Length: 214
Image 1 (cartoon, rainbow, N blue to C red):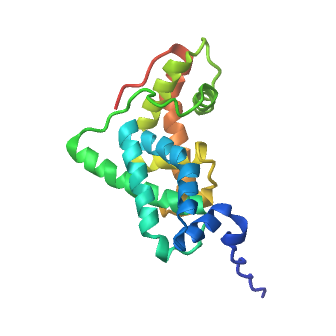
Image 2 (image 1 turned 90 degrees about the vertical axis):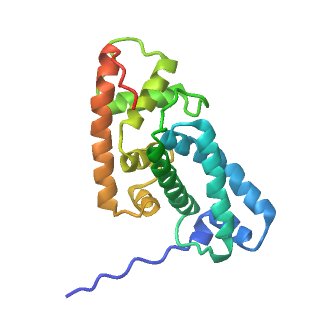
C-alpha cells in the first residue's frame, strides 16, 4: 500500500516579490509599504467599488485594508501569496461594509465613475457570460453600466469570487483561500455566478434589454 507524500511547502518569500516587500514592512521599512500601496491600491479600489457600489466608499475601504495590513505587520508570516492574503483582508472589509450598508438600505450601483475597466474587458465579460453573439452594435458606455448592474444582481459571495477570478486573475485555490472557502465551493460559486450573469446579460446582448437596478 503506497503512502501519498505530503505536498512540499511553498517558499513564498522566494517566489513572490510582494511577500518580500511585506517582510520588509514587518521590519518597519516605510518605502516597502509605500511600494505595496502603489502596486495594489487601484486594483483594490476596482474590486471594492464593484462590491459596495460607490467609488468614494471603495477608496475609503481600500484605506481601511491598508491600515489593517500595516497594523498586522509585526505578526505577518508568508503563508500564502501576498495578493491572496491582501484580498482575504479586503473580502472581510467589504463584507462588513455591505452588512452595514444593508442595514441602512444604501447600497446602490453607480454607472462608471472611475473608468476602471476597459471597454474591451467589459465587452468580453458580457459576451462570455451571455454565450451569444450580439445582434446589434454594443455601446461601450452603456455596456459598462449594464455589466455593473449585472454584477450587482449576484449575491455577495458570487460577486467577490467573480471579481477575483475575472479581474484579479486568481486561481480557484487562491480565491478559496482569500474567501476562506473550499476550492469546490469556489467552483460552485463561479458556476452559479456565470449562469446568473448569463440570464441577466443575454437579453441585453441580443435585444438591448437592460437589467433592473438593484
